[in-house]
Amino acid sequence: MSSLLKDIYSLSFYEKFSESLSQTVPSFNRQQFITQIFTPDFNDKELKDRMRHTSLVLHTFFPADYGKTVDLIENVIIRLRRDNWKDDRLEFMFLPDYIEIYGIDHYEVSIKVIEFITQFVSCEYAVRPFIIKYGEKMLNQMARWSLHKNHKVRRLASEGSRPRLPWAMGIPELKINPGPIIPILENLKDDPSESVRRSVSNNLNDIAKDHPELVIGIARKWKGLSKETDAVIKHGCRTLLKGGHTEILQHYGLDGKNISLTAFKIISSNIKIGESLEFNLSVINRHTSTQLVRLEYAVYYKRSNGQFGKKVFKISERMYEPGERADVHRKQRFILITTRKLYPGKHRLSIIINGQEKGTKYFVLTG
Image: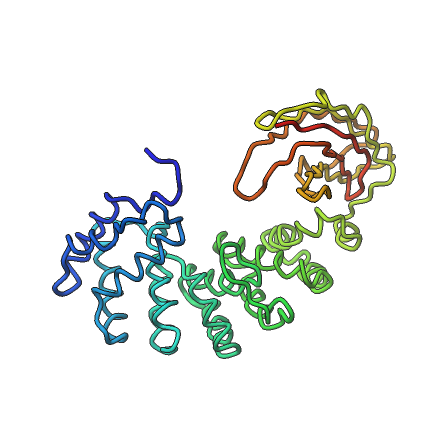
């Protein structure tokens, strides 16, 4: 069985999906559909390319009239549920992708079907071209969606309006001015759905990368409203916390004074790609009162140009009693991943306590 994510688009998936299509799409030809999907270059296509390819193939079987196609897509989803397909399956991202491609010039019709589709599979990527094209009109629609009875539609309002949604096109205007997003987040900050609240956190974290003072102001405003809202803002400030932003550290009472780092040691300062860096350390609260301690470490990865890229990893955050000492042992694996290339040479490891780097050591990574 393949472990590649792109292989969710397999022959067995398309065969089963085509069974549902044959029950809903007039004159649908299953064999022709399979043949058009599996082009000679299909195996070379990555995940998003396969998704887009599926959208384009479906277009050859759907009506030329977009309004009729929208009605047909709704019937297809109803049939998929009847055929025991579960909601939120990644494979079906081509359904909102279809609307993104062919519905961008049909605003009213597309908004209606997006609201329907997102309750089956998220339309968070598909709405972004609509925000860029229609601006305030689309953002007003998303504000209305933030009050929707269905939690998946409410989540779409927040997730789709993120300035920096991963795997998606950025929204330059919202990076510059996130003001239109704030009413949406205000509506959802104490939403009963955890997935919605998590989306609010992620949106705030996006905003904080360009407008830290705005998010810090929201943190102060929302503080103490509820346990859930406190958790939303804490997760939404995670990039600021990892970056050691002074005001957010003060907001959470994270003071590095009189919190000591001792016995910091890298067990082996020479490791190979594929191995783990092991290190030990101890933390001591030298205050005469209980203190909140946020303990992190940063790896400074060597880049191709010889400079370093910093990545912060959280170890723990808890209260320490006066004089309390905690001993910590950690491993950091250095494996090849698609989002980070590893380069042999000297790297750095630092220990961060309440936003302050308390100790740094070097190690060598070899091929």
